[in-house]
Image (tube, rainbow, N blue to C red; front, side, top):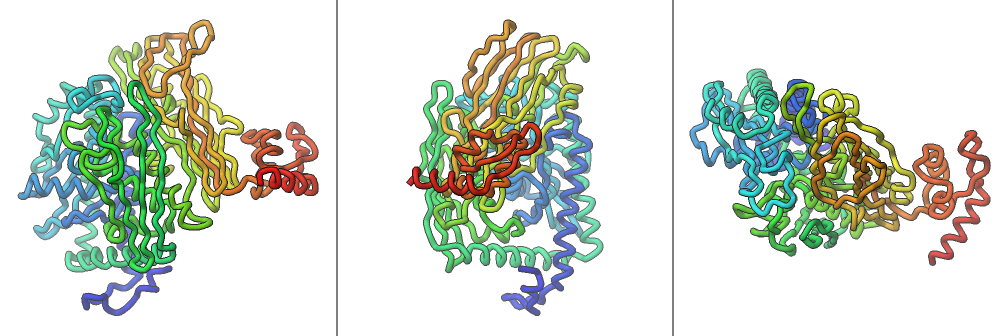
Length: 604
């Protein structure tokens, strides 16, 4: 469906419609502004979690607190931006040009304390028209341990992070130095934090400058008309997509693995599609209360992760903004592990683990809506490859802290494609960058001994889940602390429509003598020189019957080493002639047909 399909002369309110080409031009210009904000933060950030992994997002919100443009922002970050701007306006009703606010409060609109968000109100002709939003995950936020993820913290006091509920950090474009001093005193890597703060602020100010130029070019009145009509268009696109689904209620159930003294956390997602009304209602109220640990969702993440799961099964070209959100209702309750947390509930890990499970469970639940609907589950959790490392760097004489993103977490299969190998986390939808091994080794005193994909770890199916990876790393000289929060050890990602589950995750420590000691799924380990930590991520779940996979795809996977000849024969029913070693491997069509017939009969 194109913009031209909605090029009526007037809209329902009698307002003259903008030319469809102009509507598209302005919409793409807004996305370009967000991408310029993104480029600014990526190039100016100091920590590897920002300038290598790109664990940040930018967005534009209207003065009425409606999400307008997100470009390539991480879903877990951007879908709650409007909640933050609403709190900014509530706490600061007299906004002024030159203001900037720092927000990381998970109890109103932010994700979790580690995501420092800069909010810059944008004015034109004396009117507050937009807010430029730049949100970046920090290497350190003053937690009681050197990590931004605290799964075992009973409340925010034990978590220890500095909390900034929409605090003024700039007036008249000048820093509020009191806040700068507070952060420098509490954060373990103050210079690194300050560099990242300036990069985030610069990103938001870039958005402010470009938005002013946009309004100067087109005028306030036309831009306001554009916003209204762009939201209406987005809503029509969303309505059309939902109307093509069956009217049905689907239920997805799963769990986060047990950890430490805590049992597994069951999760239930109920989604009701009303095709005639073109609406989707998602109900999360039938879930357990908040737990005395850091895995509780914040309001923003509870909503945005199920919305992400819904968008994952719809046309990817639908705009992700307040217009399309009009057709979605998410029901939450207070004091619920996937609902609205009450102070001082700890939400330290609200952007991963349980959050990842919400995305996975939601997208796979739509299996119940139709033959080719739904997306299998992908790998999740902050495993060894996504751990927080810290220690003293003898090269600088000072401390270091950084969030690694070197794991892969195999992606889920869909009705149309195999899983994405570098999926990393469901909440990021493949948009998070994986670290460079070389850059991590340059910036921090660690050595990556090996990184490899594992054979037969992706869930078999008509389309295959992505394989998992194994990573091994350790300190170059002085001790390194590794704090990690894995998941999928007990309950790996499931396949749908007959697809098989991906492989489970696990963690180990290699001792000085080469022996291996199993590590718990979530924990902390300190490595001495000569010791190594080993992390294996999940493989992604498969989609559809493995016996329906194109034999040439199976042959390709065997040649790549992702699928073994035994799995090709026993799971996919594909027989070969020749050998992979000398590249003479070829599909034996007759033997494959016979093998698949035999396996199909045996499976009933």
